[in-house]
Image 1 (cartoon, rainbow, N blue to C red):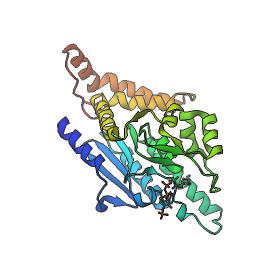
Image 2: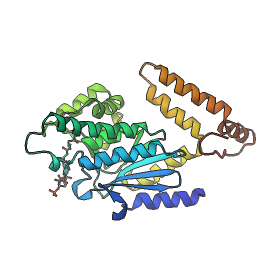
Image 3: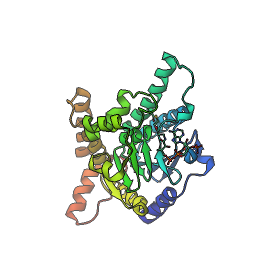
Image 4: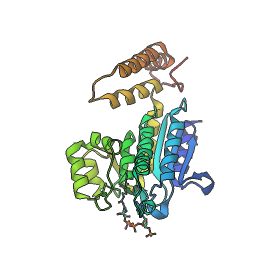
Length: 286
Ligand SMILES: C/C=C/C(=O)SCCNC(=O)CCNC(=O)[C@H](O)C(C)(C)COP(=O)(O)OP(=O)(O)OC[C@H]1O[C@@H](n2cnc3c(N)ncnc32)[C@H](O)[C@@H]1OP(=O)(O)O
């Protein structure tokens, strides 16, 4: 798809809520060329996520993980108010749940968050409003968060009496560190976007009217670069700060071989020599 048509179409998708026929368990997936847009779609409840929605997110991101040639995923919330206000509290049981159901509930959320992180392509959270509780954790599981100055963030779960597992908190902790995580959890505060940006939860802030254009421009920058470089960039960034495992080393080694033996690098070098913009394939292969 030519760049201008891609930009127009991605803009059209991001500026409108998905039609009802695209929404399954309050989650919609749309694709624009090699970019997927995942929309949380329960605007009347600040896009709160039911168990069915968490399970659907798991399925969706598992499918996107296997989508060869995918260049980016944008995660956003329908309606004017929220990415998501967390797990659907109205679904929480009024009676005791029992060990098996409680474990299954938490594991369903953790599975969804792990699936988000496991997509090889960059996953960008576009945050125009509330990213609270599980909504904040979902945003943190994405690779990059771009937010409007009107967005708000927090994990106010103490007032509910729920607890969080390792997966739900680890992505937030990696971004802001355990001390800021403790502050958010202990205070239950919902902080403005500027504060979320200051502590590292958000990478870029925009005026509310510029969020979509900023996200599109970022996606375009990703698509203009070599697919193999971006895939390796995500891997090494995720590996930073933890000991290198044999599996990590093997993955990186394969990507080095793919890069030096593949078409992306030859195209990049040729474009540099010819003083033109590179035109990359989708998989870094011949
Ligand atoms: C592992 C993960 C665990 C979790 O995620 S636990 C859940 C953590 N999340 C929360 O505790 C946030 C709960 N929501 C709120 O505290 C407030 O909302 C906000 C501060 C986020 C926003 O306040 P405002 O803008 O005034 O909206 P409003 O009038 O409270 O909500 C509008 C409608 O949305 C429903 N809603 C909001 N959040 C949730 C939710 N998380 N689960 C279910 N429903 C929710 C409300 O009830 C209401 O609906 P109606 O108009 O029918 O009363």
